[in-house]
Image (cartoon, rainbow, N blue to C red; front, side, top):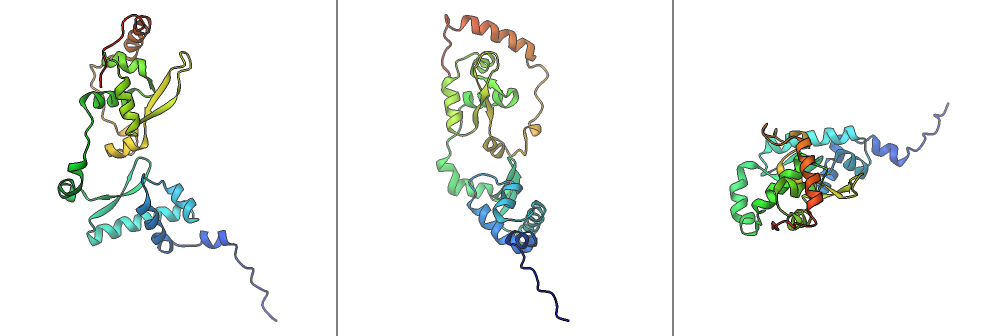
Length: 213
C-alpha cells in the first residue's frame, strides 16, 4: 500500500519549527542595526518564531560572547536587548570615540530630569514649583535629547504631562523605573507639593519666574 501524500507545511509552521541555533544569525543582524533596544516580542515577530525561541537564542548568544571574550556584549535594558561595549573597555572607548563628542547635561537639566523621573507623569508647572525656577528651556533640552516625552494631559487642568522615555532607562542602565534608587526621606510630601502648586498657579501670571537654562 502506498503511503499517503505528505501535506506541505505552511511557511509560518516551518518558521515556528526553527531552533534557536537556526535563527541566531538573523537575530544578530537585527541587533546590529538596532538604534534602540529591541524587545523579545519585536524580535520574534521580525524573525517569525515563538518568543521562547528568541529567549533561548539570546541566552546562547550571551554565553557565546562571554566564553569567547568578545569586546561587546548583549544587555537587557530599557525593555529590550542591544549590543554594548564591555565595561572593561569603557576608558579606551571614551578616549578614542566618546570624549571629544560628548555633550553633557547641565546641572539644571539633571535636576529637572530627576524631578520628572521620580514624579512622573508631571506637568511643567509642578516641575517649576519643585525647582523654584522656570524650566521651559530645560524641558526643551530634555525633549530634544529624547530623555523625556509628552505623556498626555492632566485631567483637571489640561496641562501637558511629561514622563521619562525608554532611552532614559537605557542611558541610566536600568531595566525599569522600579530600579531607581530610593528618594531621601526628607523630601516634601506629595500633598505639600500640591499645595505649593496651587499657590504657584494663582501667582504665576503676576510674578514670572526666573529662567533656568
